Amino acid sequence: MENDIIEIKKASGEKVKFSLQKLRASLRHTGADNITIEKVINSVRDELYQGISTTEIYNRVFALLKNKKSHFASKYKLKKAIYELGPTGFPFERFVSTILKYSGYDTEVGKIVQGQCIKHEVDVMAHKKNKTTIIECKFHSEQGNNCNVKVPLYINSRYQDLKMHWNANKKNGAKLTQGWVVTNTRFTKDAIQYGKCIDLYLLSWDYPTGNALKNRIDRLGLYPITVSTLLTAKEKNYLLQRNIVLCRELVDESFYLDYLSVSEIRKEKILKELKQLCNN
Image (cartoon, rainbow, N blue to C red; front, side, top):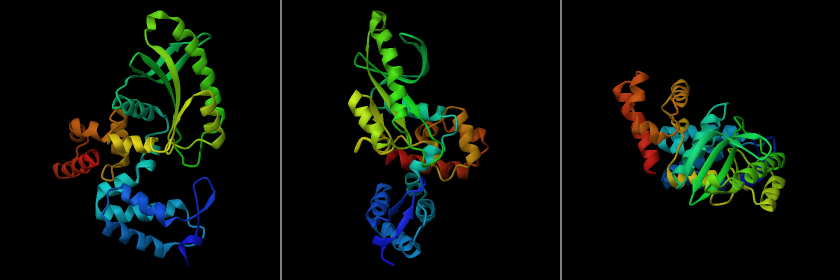
């Protein structure tokens, strides 16, 4: 059966044509060599059938990469790893805050800020060059739940209330100049159109093109610990509860692995995997 007529089922239920080019691009993104890429593609191509889910394809590719090199598999699972940050969304807020810190911002997480009408809890406040930005994080723990236009509509009303009060107070110094909405999923077409119209900055897994969440993570090497293929789910949860969100944080504070009673041999393997990710 030819690849170009294979329909695959996304997590949202939508059916799309399988793209060999997209799979090859995602494999190149992991840093895998050409020989590994072609072996994975040939194996997956042989197992395709009409209506196969993206989850099935993902699981097969992940297993093949993990068998080759764990850090290839770790990079491949980045999107899934962000979903695994936890149901509360707080680790995702810290994750977004850290990305902004590495981009030159001073940040605060979970701050209560007075608006013109009411007080608001702001997920992340970011300050840079006498300008302040408020960021609302919309985290989804399941794939297929996209952010529709109601989200930026709601966030913009909060932003306007905060902006009126903040900029009227000279003690704040920096002007509140922009509102952001950040999500680990995707925005609908209407949400993006509305954001552009009112100048509300939207950041999602794949938007804006070239500077999306996935691009920023790769560019800065800021991978969440949930990408690790060597840490167990229980160990990841332990680390997240102690505000260890990034691979590089665990590399710097590896004593947490001792608290988890990780053997020296396994500890060495885990740190090697995390360092390879950070260096990439």
